[in-house]
Length: 239
Image (cartoon, rainbow, N blue to C red; front, side, top):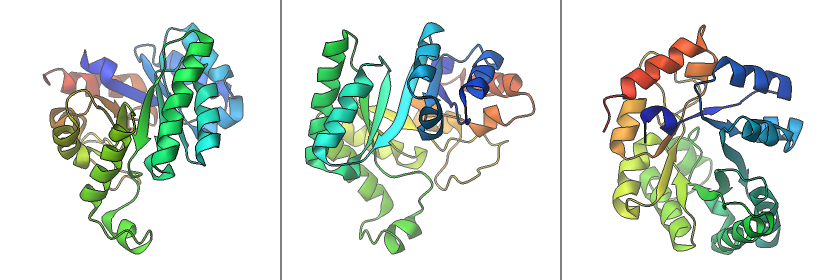
C-alpha cells in the first residue's frame, strides 16, 4: 500500500460545510475520519457525501455501552458502508462479541462489506500517570494496552487503536493480520498538542502501524496541501 493511502485525516470540524471545504482543499487525501463532533452535527449525511467522492471512511464513534446497545449501534453503523469503526475495549468481552455480531448482521442487511471493527485500547491523551492515579489501573501502560488488544483479538475484532509507542509490542503479540491504527502521530516539525504518547509518522510505520491518523499537523497548517505533501515525502522511503 502506498504511504499516502495509509494516512487518515480527521474531519475535526463542526459542520458539513467546513468538512466539505476541507475535503475539497485536500483532494489527494483518500481516507477521512469522521468523529463524534461532525457526526453529531450532520448524522450520516457526511458519510454519504464522502462515499459519493469515492473516499474511504473511518467512523470513529468509540462506542461504549452495554452489549445489547452496542450490538444495535454497530448493526446500524455497518449499513453506511464505512471502512473502519471503533468501540472501546473497556466495554468488556461480552460487548465486544456483540459488536462483532452486529457489524456482520448490519453489513449483510445492507449488502455491503462489513467495516473493520477496531478496539480503542487507551486514549492517546492519557499518560501513564493518569492511568495509575486517575483511573486507578494497577498495570503499566504498555501492559494495559496489550491486554485490551489481546481481548479484542480473542473476541473477533479486526484490530486496535493504540499510540505509536505501543504499536511494536502489539504487532509482535497480535500478528501481522491484526490492523493497528495510530493516532497521536506528529512530524518532528509539528506541535504535539494534547498527545502524550507520540512518534513521528515514519517511526510509527516502521514500528508496525497499518494506518496513521494525522490531523492538526495537516489541517491546521498554514498551507495544508504542502504539509500533506511533506509528510507523504517523508514516508516514501518506508517499506
